[in-house]
Image (cartoon, rainbow, N blue to C red; front, side, top):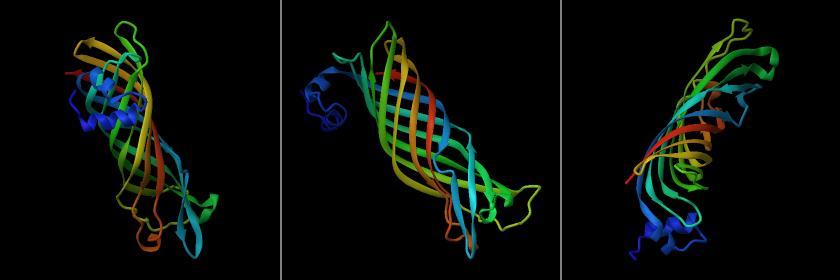
Length: 245
């Protein structure tokens, strides 16, 4: 039996109660996947306070977000177990683009001075170690669960705001600029794998993505101590094609 340190490390992390030898013996080959999904964004922070000293702070209320697009590639090894019908372990790279968060600006923390609406964009690039485990198999249909963890680079950009027609008090734009925040990210999901033939499958899956923190740069002028920040989760539906080598 050839010793492969990379497979040994993945075995220890993802299958702590399974021997290295049994995992290596069950390996059937390598795989390559590409996928496309739709991510429903879920901001966890709903109010940002913008310093206006000596005046009371302005409040940026986050009132909604859009559906973003997720692209992914995944490559690794797969095998057939005695307890589970199949498993996959690999590296996944995904990119969530065209994310948008929008809301309104409450000047001086007074509801009657809700004079502006705003929007800012973000995208997320992630590198994750991902494990997928089949639950059972009925003919060519195999339900599975998946887990992944890794590093995310989340970029906030494209902040803009505009006055409402009922605006009572104008202000200078804070000019929050682009900034990238890097940190821990993880995902968990479930889906169904359909075998097309012995070398290819198509999967439909749901995945919860904890993308991590997002923040803009500090503003300019009187806003130089303030920035917009958030913590973004996403509920993602994905279609994936896999080639088995």
